[in-house]
Length: 88
Image (cartoon, rainbow, N blue to C red):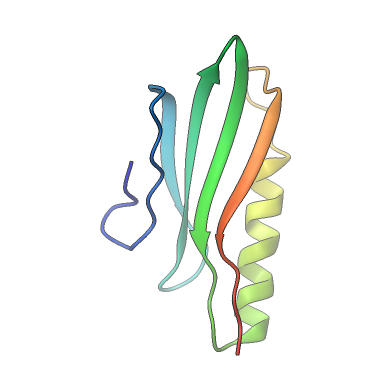
């Protein structure tokens, strides 16, 4: 699953139940994918945080953290946040 051409990618040998992309800042976003593995449901987040501006990077991280606490209509067993969290 790619995030609308902005560089994020989640690969899975398991089919996606649901997927979406959420913009976290002007040039960055997070890909979210829901998969079922062995009867357990996983939400996987893939992102690349802003590298040069610390305030923007922290805002992006807060948005992703907020997404990971959202209550949807699906019971989730595990949440995994992956990506490039770098800074200079």
